[in-house]
Image 1: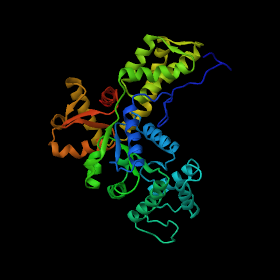
Image 2: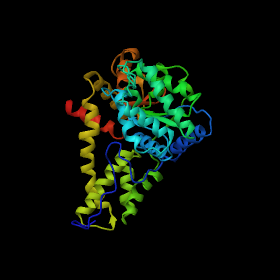
Image 3: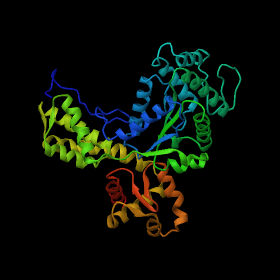
Image 4: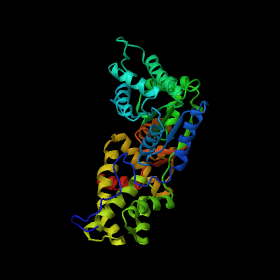
Length: 390
């Protein structure tokens, strides 16, 4: 990794949603998606598949991998990332443009997608109505069902299917989510159609508010990596570049990341850069990790931790301070009732604050009545912020 023309590219990807060079620890989740494809191509119906997990654990990477695998198999499988302010119709229209070029040439499904695009791309689906070639607005539910049904009917003639792959499901309104789920439920019983999504841990209860019978969905957890998986995520990309990790260096990165995939990529990335600056071209050693750690932690504090803390209201920050204080004595999980007592409030009075923090992804409920911070190390950050304010 010497400087100059001989420097090797850094194989680690700490960007949001960037696919790691070694996608480890997700074989079970990918196998479920493959089972969905097999079942539908064989003429059976399947339940919707929803991946749930904290931010930064790789749900977006997982969904994109599923979309790519289905597209390679000839399916129409657009990946949509939903966020506030982005209409589902615009997202689906853009996805149609991207996927039209990836579909199997000559297939009826391909012709159907191109036909829809030639009509002006009116794949307007939720929000302000639709105009799929008709020139007149249609109710959101009716239009979405019609577009996807036509695609799935064409796919069935090809022995293929259609999958709508939707990220950040908790970001849409209950009304829009209800319409989306309603369409998925209607199509799954008669056509080769799959609804595959992802969202934060509270997504199952949010979906249940939007539609009935969603308890039958397959909710698949997507968690932090175990130590062996974390080691593989670090070692395999380096080995592909002819570089090895010293055991002490590897152990320190795995410990520092605490199984959190984003942190793992970030620490490994900065260690690689430190080794490059030291003109080491064969082995990353402990000194490289020690040089990288303060750089990585500054990025975490300024970006990940800081963004979440600054996005909290004053009331929410008081809740976070009380939660952090309790953790000093009780460990990394505390009872919501204990936080209410620490704030000298009734549990019902602070529940809206708790729920808002859960929706923002800052805290989560690993068990009923227990709360934890969603990102490793955030408790220590909150404690320092409290000390600064005091």
